[in-house]
Length: 219
Image 1 (spheres, rainbow, N blue to C red):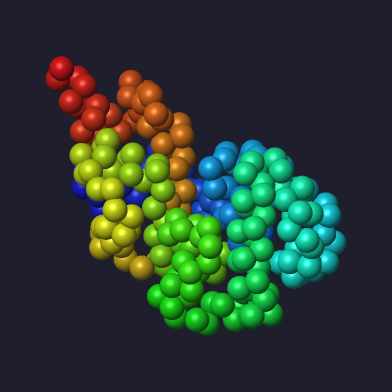
Image 2: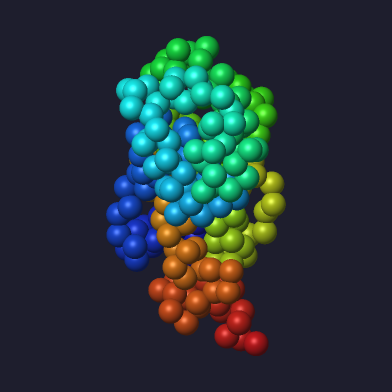
C-alpha cells in the first residue's frame, strides 16, 4: 500500500469521521491546549467546567477576564493545570489583539499566523496546527505521535522531524481542509483501535499491507 492510499483504506475500515475534533471553533482553541499530555475524557471534564462557569457568548474573552488561578481551578481535570492555565492566558492575550474574533484570524496568511502562534509560550507545532486546521479551517496537516506510529509500522518510514512528516503528507494529499481533518482523525482512530502501543495485528484489517505485521510473520 502507498501512502496516498491510506485515507481511502482507513475510511473503508472506520467509516467517515468528518471533522473529528468536536466543539465550536472557540472551544477547539481552548481544548487544543487542554489536550496536551492527557486523554480526551479529561479534556471534556475540564471543558465542561469552563462552559458551566461561562455564560457569555464570547467564551474566549470571558475566560481571559479571569485570574490565571481561577482558570487553573476550572481546568484541573486536564492535568498540569497551572502550566496549561498560563499557556491559555498567553494564547488568549494574543487573541485579544484580534478582539477574540476568530474570523479576523482566518484572514491572516497561514504561514504568518503559524509563526505568530509558535511564538506563544507553550504552543508547539502540533498545538498550533490543530488550531489552524480545526478552529480556523486552514489546510495544514497535523502530526502527532499516532501519525509517527502509523508511518513507521505500516510503511516502515522512520522520520522524527515534525516538519518532514507534515511535508510528506502534504505532498501526497492536496491542500484540502476537510480531507486533512478527516485523515488525521482516521489515523488517530486506527492507532487507538488497532495500532496501539502493543499492536493488535491479528485483528487489524491492514495487516496484509503493514510492514510491521509482515516482518513479525516472517520471524
